[in-house]
Length: 490
Image (cartoon, rainbow, N blue to C red; front, side):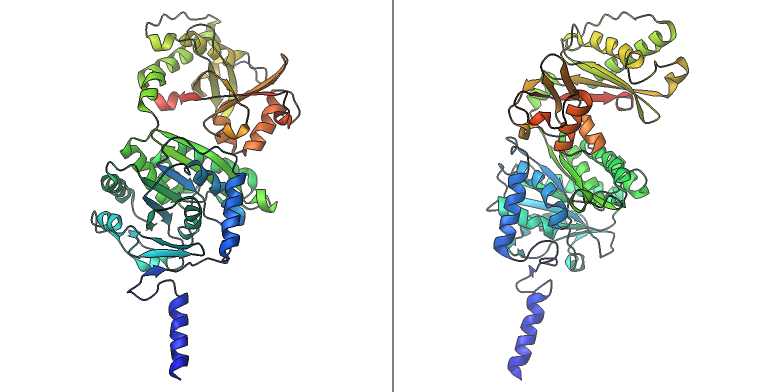
């Protein structure tokens, strides 16, 4: 009888989410459901996801990775992009920020466990880091209930185990705190990390849920645009209203964007986007997934190449004044700028939107003459010479928005793995008569995969076969762009 009771008790403690308080190892909640419970199979599956992720690991320090948390069959391939991008870095502490799907509370639960177990082994919790973070506010505490059924944090751990060694985690489940508490959390996280450069933050979120494919892609494009703009307020407000965008993890996403601003991180790149329909073929009701990285970049390079807010504002003024004068009178305004930065010979595009829709877009890849005059000339062309649209009329001017893209010098590549969606614009060409260009923001606005992005570029813009980018005769070049609009400089 005693042996039977002992077996029963052993079974209860072995399969409950938490073991006896003396050990405090968090057992997996969704092993065998969201991902396989067989260690070798799991390791091989993640390895294949990483192998197929069409990206070169970043040679810079990655501070933040935003990845999805659905079952691996649906979102594992997308998550692999973010994790692979950070794989060259060495981290001692990895903070995982995830939303609560099951336990309702208005605080932030920071793990008090000793470790988390997956089929790939146990990862220890950085208890010192966790305690220091909890000490920052009474709303930062360990709520075991938040971890009992939750999958959003757990599914990220096997990827970390596959890629990194010698690290500890800080597991954080976020309930429904207010924006002010998220600001406090961001400041506290920055304080605890201090000058350390061996900390990675992983944010777990999916995008829109259960909409038709076309609507989902539009909503997800809005969400991704806000994320890569590091716009915490837009993410927070847009997701709370559930009109323009959706993210089940919008709370941790808001928190990390606030942290990024607090930390002075300047760059965000979308690496991959897909939705469940890309796997199942069902386009009537899909869930969206993305991988995004956030990092600081080289401040010296930024200071040398980036346009200041005043310079961006001046280029927008030139574009607006030029367009209005030309549409009204047909006259081309003359400008004389003394700022050396605006006098560089650089390529630029001017894009015009009206009521949220494209109204014109014309550019010059390399630039001919000073940048400010290129912007002037492209403003006229975008307003009156884009063959896809009728010329802009005076009555439209007040309803139009102008966006300027200042381009870096294109460079040829041999492998499309070098293309980072959302960061790179791409030029494809075959001979003198077939050339097409997509600006970096096209990937963000459409939500296309890299393959679809290149297919559309070849077919739509270059007049080539959809898969011409695979042809060795096709020249592929990439460039970056500083993109800003009237709303950005106001």
